[in-house]
Image (cartoon, rainbow over all chains, first blue to last red):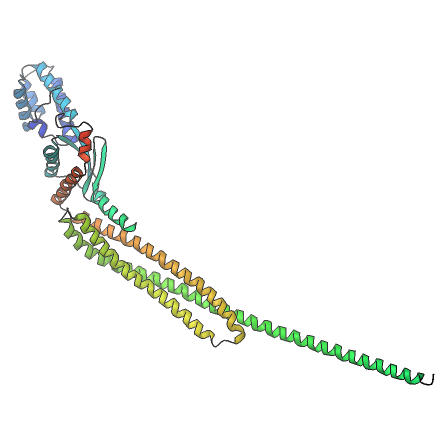
Length: 158
Length: 238
């Protein structure tokens, strides 16, 4: 399956929550594509936020999908859904609820350093103090300050 | 036959003499036995006194040792409070400084931790050394006191006191060792607790972000993501 370009539509989805939200909206659009009542474009604009709608229209244009062709729209929705499901979900435990800037910084790091677009699944755990616990592709790593402090103390006791 | 009466008289006299001597011996033996009994009683009393004295000395020694240990516990509790206050101040300053340099965090924290731990242990050791000193002084005092005791009781008391003191000293040594171990654990927990509190309170969002990104770099350097790519995750797939 051809991967969709990382346009704004995909790029702006950073967290599991956002992904679920978009998947729900795509599902609605998929269902709407089979009903022929009223303007499809208006329905899309009503379902998405303005920036999401713009990104969706842009991708339709890039992919040559006509909004008056429900089958083509439905196929695009399916591809987008499938592509979203194929994104790497990176589970991270963080000490604080990350700001939007922090989420962006983490996602950008993965894109720039590893060339992967990820979706963050964040759990807040103040006990870790700082840093993160990460679970990705079946691997787990404790990169927390708590772990560092604990190991320093443990070494001191050996 | 003429000499028969004389012989009889002599025989009777001799028998009487023998009987008298036997009686004398019997009386003498009775006197000796009586004397022996009296001496035995005196000896028992002396031993009993010596035992009582020894028990008294040992009881006092044990009471004193227990008081020393109790005093040390009180000193330790007060000391821990003071150290906690100091550590909080020193720790806060130290953590503030080291959090600004996440690259050298491990080493800097280790230095900070070891510094605080060494300082704490130094005080703890000196407190416990005073316990030992007091115990030694007590032993010396008892030894001096024993010099004035009677010859009969001295050896017995000396033996008992030495045994008990040896036992008490061993207990004090064990106590000291266990206290040092406990203190070492307490200091670590304390330093860790303070570090966590300070870090939890003072890190800003941007500092959290910096630590996350730095840790991602470290994880990359340590090959975490290489393993992922080896597992088939490639940028093409995404």
